[in-house]
Amino acid sequence: MSDSPITNAPVGPQEKPILDQLVLIRDQLLLLKQDKSTYVKSSDVLPLYEKVIEQVSILNDVRGPEHLVQNRVDTVLDDCLQLISLFFMAVGRNHEAPALYAMTGNIMRLCHHLKEASFYSKKDLHSLEETLNKMESSMRNGKDVYSEHLLRRIQYRLEICQRMLKELNDFLSTLSPEMVPTWEKLVSILRAIAALNTRSKFSQNDLEELRRQLLEIQSTMKDGKLPDETGVTSSGQDLVVPLLNRCLKFTEIVEQNKGVIDERFRDTYDKLLEIRSQLERLTMTQAWSLRETDLFMWQRKLDRIDDSRRDGNFFDAEGHPADLHAQRTLLYLIRRGYAYIYQLLIASEPVSEALLPIYNQLLTLRRCLVEVKKAGGVSNPRELYPYSMKLNSIDNMRVDGKFQIGKDIPEGQGSVNDLLAECYELAYELRTAAEEENDDD
Image (cartoon, rainbow, N blue to C red; front, side, top):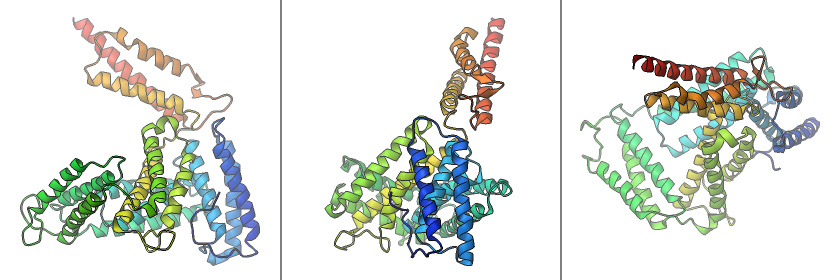
């Protein structure tokens, strides 16, 4: 495979043996990733993790204070750490320090794109802040368990994420609370226009509806300023008015092109559409079909396309830049791709893939019991018989209170047992309520 798309400086003779070892480790990780014949176990991952950390230690000794130099050693090391991180998630060790590496890389990309786009909602930032706070907590818990070499690298990336997030919050700080709803609506409309622009079938009616909403907002303007919902012109005009104009301009551009991309960028467009559709499919079926390491290749494909830009724009084979329509269309697809990967990472359960079938059955069972409770419960305890049968069949799989797969006891026992107990409790509440009702009758 080709390396991660990071700037390459020459590899010195002292670092060549490190590079050779890292390439071998990466090949082992990729082979493990491709083997779907059995589930991944901690015992498969930990020896490879130790090998990577050993090379990081040697690299730090060789470089000394120059540890931030970027060359091919760093790109292959980044691949190794990314894969190790995803493997830790696949075995259910989501809240341990090595599992954080993949998420830091994804958040760095998301923050960079939000800053570049200059339009985003406060909800976007709130989600990222919550995720980073949880990661900081995991880092504190792992400081006495994992290698200082690894923790230092992850902490460095976390600090970059926090710094970028502060810049993004500062950008929105001039918005008064009263102007936030207008800003959020414009952000939503611009995203809807961009999504419509990449549909397989372009809809003029949908575009007209979005334009109508924009013109409705524009009609409230007084002296070139937008009042808030109470009719007062409050702070944040320097953000809201340009965004409104940007939305109107993009509406015209999309209408002219009617969803057809410049042929010079058709190949990149098709690749990004394929990435988006695959990731979108995974977000709908991830509980049943996703192995976290599958995200590695999608992330790398996005990285290569993203890093092929120069000064933020795309260029054709002859070095000519993309027009505004092609540029915004491609950037929208890249950003959607990174957003889907983020969704999949935060949705990953701290349960080994070996236990996921049981865990997902219990999730479905809990959902059914909750719906029955919302609908008013059952009229007769016998109606709970199918649920009780399923619960008992899952419970009987345990040996000494633990779920075993062969001779292994996979990670995530606590999460599965808690969910089983919750299902039992819901079934008990429904049965008790039905019995009391029958007694009253």
